[in-house]
Image 1 (cartoon, rainbow, N blue to C red):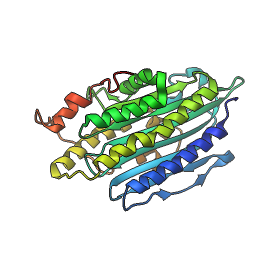
Image 2: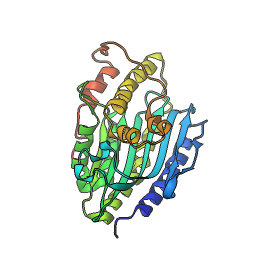
Image 3: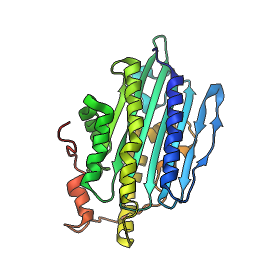
Length: 298
């Protein structure tokens, strides 16, 4: 198949609907606010945001299909030869900020760019990653087993790319336990690249839902909540200072409410805070944030 925007767009819309339905079932009380915002030339934005659910404090599952006369800087830094060319892009991105600190935050996105040139240029990108506040080995193994199932022989490379990307250099620490990440992906041609993208999308819920259900009823108190809000500060730092997707959204003129919907509803910062050695909070730094081979046989 020649590179086409429509089949990718339709898959992303179907995936968005499935994830919204699943998260509503996990959230307890609470529903997504939904809008369909048509744009020029058949483009479309479908923001879906849930706030103040029983078990999910905030979630956003966003779909966009856009066109532009030239790619934003954030999209051409690695491909400067594409600067000034017209393009279409379609993407789905999501974030889940749970209420219970024992349930990890998660993020996923998938995207497809089609540059309108004499010789069409296209690529896929995306992945999913997980950011726990408290580390559980069985959760980390399950997450990475699903990542392996989605990507097969590509897993080791995509895991390493995820570890490298979700890194706060100014803190010298990873954002979470990683997952898989790919960009500028064309391996095997359009059909194989699209198939990989679908496998990643289809494995997100099997990766995250069992972990959510396992931890959602765990008792917690003020200590755990304070730690969750403190670690959410790291999440906000990454999204605002580092994330290419945030920069792309702002540079491309997308609706700001949608671009920044990934930010947590509440976060805190403490000056020079260090968790007490030997505590579960300290173990997050020593045992979970440094990159590990969670699926040694991969």
